[in-house]
View (cartoon, helix red, strand yellow):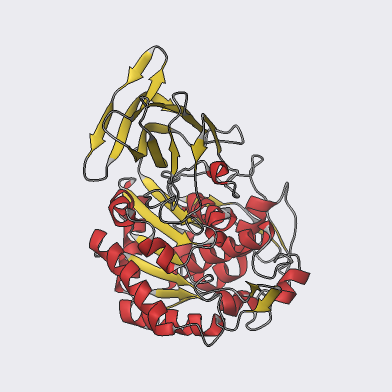
Length: 454
């Protein structure tokens, strides 16, 4: 950042409007009161310098503040390092940008983003911030998969509401034994029930807005036999589902768009049903953002414990995969971290994605500077630079991008500075809500700067 103070004027409801062109209304001493129209003015030659100074705070204050105010980034945030690096070719990334341009120009089709990781993704603040940023600049699609994470006794996304009735068992992927672990897929979770009164209900807009809606609902899961299945009652009608064998999912068409749905289950005595996810579908054009995050998940968790991951990825068909798995793979001593094994696991994951969409672009998100849990407390994670090196080598091999969180933080032992600035938690591993949201804004800013500067 250049040290100047910017004052942002945003709509009263705090949400930038969608449409084409996209508008981010802001005013500052440097702009002379001019408006920046994303999708038009951003294609001018001065875009890179303008965006690098302005877009970040425009996003920050547009989503965070309760009103217009001025704000500067803490000194520990090295925003100049927030760029997409391509150590090899970038053909797939440029093709992804072309799809975005086509979406904006025609208002047709979908662009699909898949964000996979561990607790940084499950916490939802980071991916949701990216999703919100993209929504403000492009055409909004659907918000991806839902799961009742409360059943697993873990943290969950509070931007939507989801509730259950009946008795459920939902062992956590990274802790369950093979005997207890349900067969799961893209959400990384599964919950089984034998209760006759079992149900799962969701409301997409926890804030009471009309931002999200769905015209259909897909239920991911399986019964112990064909006698156990989900159903939805709307008014006095029981809706029929279309069973899709390729994805082993149940698709329900709703009579009208809604943000609230109750899914119930027909489970005869002696049978059970395992739910692995819900997918609300609006069928509208736009960017669909899918998140797959499980606390403690490493690459083997996704590759070896999510048997249906590749099958479920057909439902995503990612045009861009944001690869943020690595913090748990590296949570070992320096002598026990094996870069070649780490890279081979990533190759398995990336080849899986490429079997679904050979044109998919990839962006690696490097590990943050951090400590790791040990038996008697916390120990500094010495493998962060090794992970960054491995990701850079993979990016060169696959023509992928790298977004260097480690560098943005300031390198080794910068986590303490982020903690002291209120951006990281006391465990020196996870970020605060504000820290995650800041990273999300930085990512969107870097993505847009790369898109327009290519």
